[in-house]
Image (cartoon, rainbow, N blue to C red; front, side, top):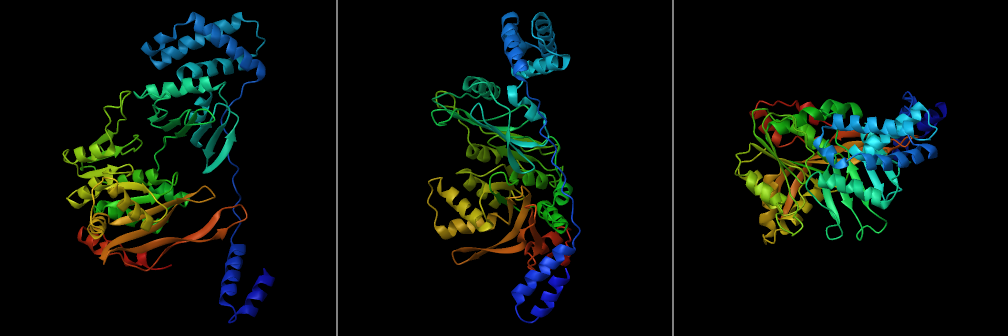
Length: 467
């Protein structure tokens, strides 16, 4: 520590960059070391070879004595009771030398095989798992605390995996086969599922499950996690209550839907909200919410209802707010028109790496409608429709962060002008690989500050002053 200070005194007035670097190093060395908490272990129990052999034998015997087609007519509790009762009886009659604990494990896995999602059922019960990625029957990864890790869970074969996949997609009225090898679906708890099978998937069926949040996060949780700075929370609340149109931008798995859920929580309860999604995962808590979901075409290629159809229809449903889970194509034009024709306060998300890229992608998506707009006219419509762009990102340490808040000001010539109000200034990595940095105000007071004041939302100007 003294050596750093001595070196700093020698450099004073000579090399400003090196002085700044040393000052940062000294500050870091003075900060108390926070002991890193050990991550809890994955909550799964693997069968021993003897237990696995017993499971296969008992499962085959069960199929002979029990009509599984009747399971659907029973409630889950009663069905599980009957399965457990028969399995216990079959094990007691078998010659398998298993302990009581081993028998319990075998029965539980057979239950999961018939009533649940087989080997991955325990992963769905582990609240630390946010994503389950099945790369063929013998390779499973999970994401926990923002990091991917290999999981010892396996299916017995590709046929076994395909049976589980068919159970998932058929439960929501969808199908998957060689003629339709890709499908989006959801589980009963709301978890989002994407499946792709051969011939498109070369190494066997691939399944990705984005877990549904059991415990709803709020802004206080994001502040506690370090995802959003405390001084920004009242600003985000204010722009929602003042009915500004918000575009949330970010990469895959960056937390866009989580942010959309939390911001939607600020919408007053006396407003009528229409949500539109490809696969329903928003969890709005207001009493007056109408949830719409797209529908894929049937086996004959008919009956498709896409997001654009739903956006157009929602305008006839007298919405106070439209919340679009994600803009991906031609529905972007209808969303912009809605934002510009009295449906202010709308929210949506988009895949983009920066706020400027997000507006560029909106422009490109409008062109997907096949309607040719003059560039300046289209950009003018975008600038008048979207008020605020929030950039979300997932850092390499696994933490999701709000990276930038930008206000859309208007047009200068053919260019949409934007003002950055806040930005996350990255400083490096610590010894444990955590990203270091600060979320700072740029000193720009937004044009919407006066609008918020007119609506009784008074934000102190100090919030926008640089640290």
